[in-house]
Length: 533
Image (tube, rainbow, N blue to C red; front, side, top):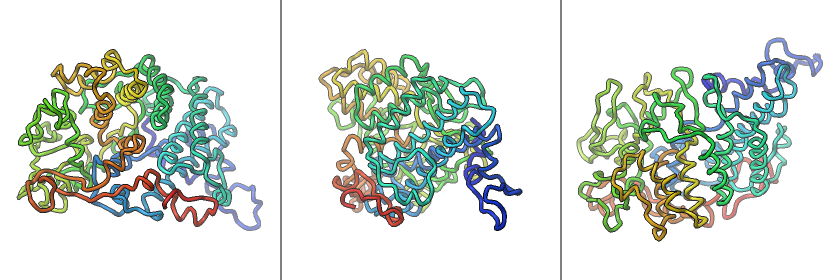
């Protein structure tokens, strides 16, 4: 859907404007749109619906999400989430406030449409149901993001006044989950959304399968394995999705809207763009690498025979750490010897080593703080100043396969047949050829660890790691102590020669939930605080 460039300008246009003394309060101003006239126009429903989509996420929010995990690090504090990654954030931390504010702003936009759509003339029942369903899925997405971070949060489905917003207590997450899953079931069961859209103008709109995939994400977070197995099995059997034939090609403009994409953020140069690659590219590509992968992520990728690098029989040589590795490592992270394809089709090999290399660790403030660079979202078709129209994928079919595999493992039902439907095709697509990596490891293997590692490698830097380490309750294990960058061999400032990047703290009694922002509690005394904040 390529109309998004206009959406961000709509929100303010449907708010009530001030009135002039001596004029009746229900009189419409002559010089601007108001609620009194906006909803009476036939195109207003679509216009308002389009305003809901940009509230889902931003490209920046997706990429920086992994900086709150053991996958990545950002060296910039102001405006970003560095303090969540290192555990030093407070009840007044701006990033926490921004997530709260933006999600509730998105909910408000959805509620405005849902509360007013019956006023819009000329809509068929089918179209009205579809528009409502799209807005309800987006609203469910927002509530999922809120409760998965804050726990209990205020829940409402109508446009509320400022006064009402300052009185609402927190709703239990159990009730929120029941409500949003109930709405998703209603949408799915009644076929309010199409399975696909025929018009190119509707690219990026929420489909029945996107609603079902969001439901799967919620069930995954809640560990409702039987339901998750059923939902993902339905998508696999009936959704018509396939893995795109190239892992790296998934993240190229030329291959947008392919058969693997279930839901994405639509961008188009020059109408709606992002500049996130400026924030992760090496200086020789005109970047300022303030966001960078960690060595913990690099070391998590298996070798080409399917074994972890510290596992007996692994095809791993510490002196040549990037050889014989999962091909997704080279597609995701740029390290010394790896390269970027340039706009003219040539390649630029990167040297990240410490020393006099322009892209090397410690050479300048523009260089990566870890010695690694992100490669996954590099758009060689960029416009001036690295502006990109690359779509950012939110949900793709590979995730559905991984969710299905995890559900079956947790239920004790994962078989060779299931492996061949889920993990094997992912590894084949990634470029594995060794049968040791492709074949079912056997029921006696640590299937849970294998699936979790597979999920991390396949979905690295796609904004999903935080929810994974929270729901697995391993954040306090992987987010405490120093995180690391490249190997320099230095005796000082390293651990076993790997650069110490940041000393992190994750308090299991506190950090599994974010604090309710203090400024919200100052305005609304009915908001309680999470434990130990």
